[in-house]
Image (cartoon, rainbow, N blue to C red; front, side, top):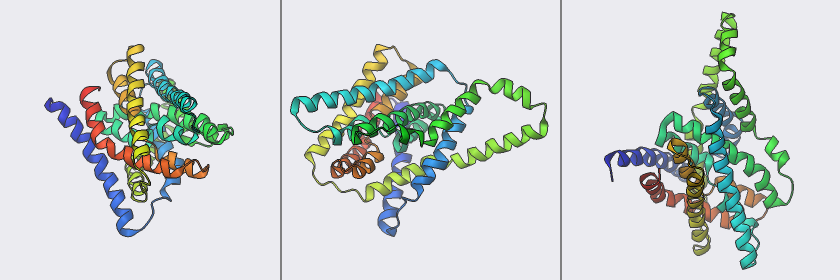
Length: 307
């Protein structure tokens, strides 16, 4: 394995699982829960991170479309395969949609994008994250509860942060030219941007600490089925991502981000929603734990051979 690849793997894996381990040990040793941080992450720091990432980069429609459509392709095809398999084997597919259909684009996805590919990778990972949020909180909620998830989607602030950030990115040059004529107001805007960036910085560490805290309270109630689901999440996501990038000839960093995030573990929210809608939460929790532990092995393999 080339030295550059080993360095890429080590700088990606070590920071992520060190912070997850700190969150795990903190919850075990102190018995304090980090759950109150969930609202801070969802409603404050995550929107700030998405907003600053969007406005600090040039908006390229082709890049946005390739990553967003890649995310939709992987998740929708994954959901269809689960539905098809459930019809063949005659079982209720509801408990399997969230743990298998969706990758962990938040806690893990943004982290691997940042640590593997830097700020440029993070901005691409955020596009996947926003696309995933749209699908997760609309179609995902509908599949689990058989009720419209549109109202839930409209309550997610990262969607609005992304839209505003994209608009400002598109019109950044004329807006800067306009406001430069008003030096006091322009300086006020710069202070506002720096403040938002400051609030955004803790997002990824907090997400990883939350993941570790959640894993510390997760128990594997059985092994065979959760392991099969965890492997299905990773292998199916990777396979569908490879089909998409090769079919549409996606290359470079966009290809790497689509493949890497698509092959990640089950999201933390899969357990929370399974518990809310009584859709075998013990299975979702077990898949979350097993698939996250598998990331120690699978992330280096994906980085070494597919990215």
